[in-house]
Amino acid sequence: MPRSLLVKVTCGADDPERANQGFTVASLGVAAGAEVSLWLSGESVWTAVAGREDPFTLEYAASPRELVAAVRAAGTVTVCSQCAARRGITEADLDEGARIAGAAVFVEEALRDGVQALVY
Image 1 (cartoon, rainbow, N blue to C red):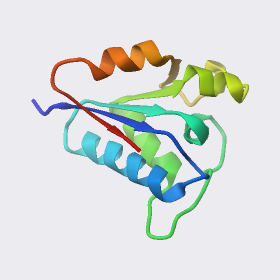
Image 2 (image 1 turned 180 degrees about the horizontal axis):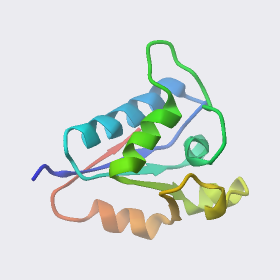
Image 3 (image 1 turned 135 degrees about the horizontal axis):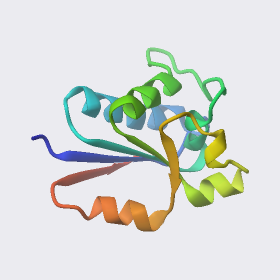
């Protein structure tokens, strides 16, 4: 079985190239058969809010919301609890399959055996 991949994206429209790298790596991890957990913090949280448009477009890149949806379909998408609270986002606001959790859960996932953690 492939190693697990934990990807944390800490930006969104404020740094679209970096954010898109994280979304792309996470979705390619799913395509490669890895167990993927995508964590969204900062402005990246908007990619998991239901009914929203893409927070940015980037030439030669896939849609951020489509990339996150690909991860949600076969992996886990988590919105940072503090980031959600600061933006008035609740679990009811999220796309189906996304959740809100805090740093303790992130650390628990990151410390599991066989996990490769990447932060963008």
